[in-house]
Length: 159
Figure 1 (cartoon, rainbow, N blue to C red):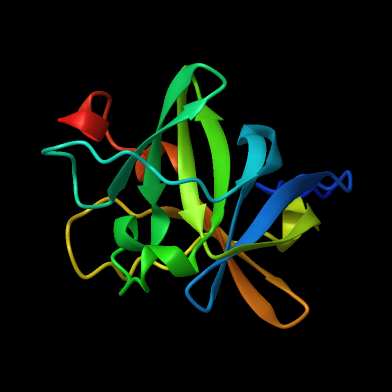
Figure 2: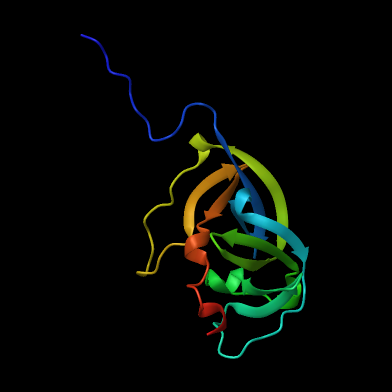
């Protein structure tokens, strides 16, 4: 009798994913580095009336109006004052580009795909989870954001 090879969901060819890690509050988060367009020092955003609470406003990014999202507020965290956060990570998902206001950029990480785990199903509400997966680096639990879920629906930035 021949034994069939076991199939795993994870690749076994040593593939890695590169992440940009950053701090929001005291917590470690990351995004796929391929979605990052640039990292900027904080800029004063021009507020827009009737925008969601987590949208700080917009900035001029080389002639393009870029909405700035306070990531702490979007994640439902108690946010410090915006002046304490002074790094904007410009990310693009599809044809949408948004600036994420964070506390600090930490590192660029190369994580083997087998070290990435799905988050547990423990949401207290029916809202979509903003975390796509988790990994542990140097004893720190790092949350990998699902940018498609984090970005507001089209048109909501200024509605």
